[in-house]
Image (cartoon, rainbow, N blue to C red; front, side, top):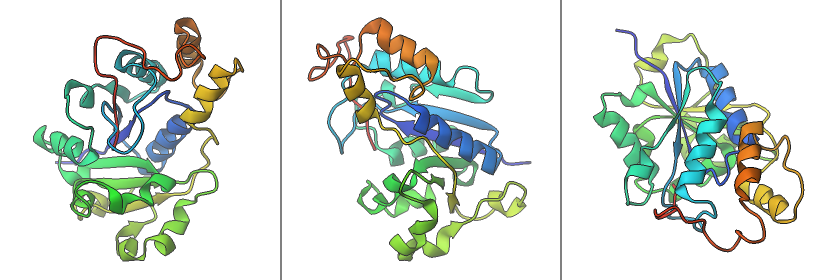
Length: 233
C-alpha cells in the first residue's frame, strides 16, 4: 500500500496572508503532497490573543484555500477549548489512522528555529516530518548551523525517493521565496486605513473590508462571535 503525503499548515491566521500561502505552495510543489490541510489555531499559548474572532479567522482561511486543488480548511483545533499545541494536533491525526511518516508539518524557518521551546520537544519531531520553508531574511539552509543537534535529521526534499515513506520522520529544508509580510503588519495597515492588496488573497481582503476587521475600532478588542477567539503552537 502506497503511503499518503498529507501536508499540515497551522497558524492563528489573524489574518492568513500571502506568506502562508507561499509556504504551502512551496511544500506542495517540492514534496508532491497528496493533500494540504490548513488548520486554524484556537488558543495560542505563546502569543497574544487574536484580534479577529474564531468565526472570522476560519472564514478567511476557507476563502484563502478555495481554488487550490487538494487544499482544505480544517476546524480540528477550533473544536477544542484546550490550548492549540501542535503535538496534540498531530496525535489527533495519528488517531485518524495517519502514520507519522505520512504527515508533513509545514512551518517557516524562523519559527522552526524556536522548536526547542515547543511543548513535547523533542518527541514532537517523531510525530510527523517537518517541512521547513525559508522566510525573508531567514533561510532554511541556515538551520543546520543554528540547530546542530538536529543536523542529522535534516534533508534536502525529493519527491520521488521511496524511503521518505518508510524512514523515521525527518526535517526537510525547503529553500523557496515567500512573501515578506506578517499578520501584524497587515493589521496595522488596516488600522491606518491603508491598502493590503496583494498581501492577502483577494477574497480575504474583501472579507476584511466587508466586516471592518482590524480597523481602529476593532484593534485592541476581540471581535465577538459567542466563542473564545484564541489559537497557537
